[in-house]
Image 1 (cartoon, one colour):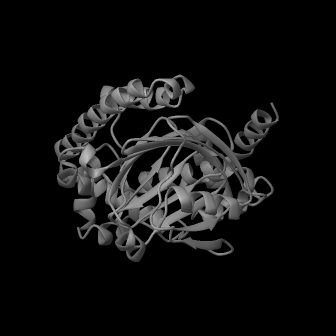
Image 2: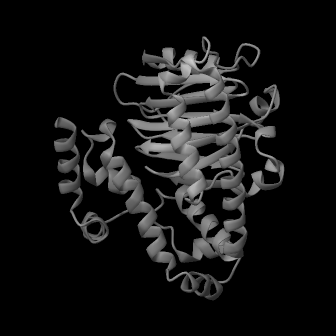
Length: 334
């Protein structure tokens, strides 16, 4: 991560965020050092990287009681990593269930990578290494629960982490309940907050097991497509990336690769273009890149011909890259 400042925080005895009673506390953090100090006290054993092109600002609302904690976070472009040594040093294991409210979050765990967009969610296991990279202005909610809050978690964890969870009614209900817990009314009625937390734990358990079941039903073909997408993300800046590289990464012949993609009504070349276009769109939407040339952003994501990039971008999103950027600036000014 060239040019990114890196800070390691190993925590003070693994201390978790603690509130006064059941009240919600909100803080605005100005500067990357204030942010890392806060995360160190709330979610210890992490490394931090600053990717923000201007002054780093974050806003946090947090609520903690019993064995669970909830936080809504809005932050600048940045990255947190839990390396293997830091994961081994952590005192206990937790499930982190994240809902994306705005912007994007790129999550990696267990050799899987997923880009989580608005309305999507993902799960992280704190006992294993992981990485989360936030776009500028990313806004998300995170529910932290001990492993014991989700019976059978150890059995499904390896399937779920590093993936975008399938949407289902239990997940939506859990999200609604989580946001309700941040309502100050619960500060005066602890027993209500506890009952809602128990309901949230039940909904989360149902949702996570349903997501694992859906992944099993999808079969090995879908798993290979996810691996292909992960490989594209890892090599996204390489203009020479082609279907032969994907076939080699998946340990299969070119013919088998095309047959696999045909089953899902895709082609390898289209997936490569789609992933690159999505990342370019994300980069164009980030305030830190507003002064960068669109051509440079396209080249950074593996496009070697601007005319082709602009044509594919308009086919995919209905506007040219420059029109998309102008729309984003207009919305920001409004």
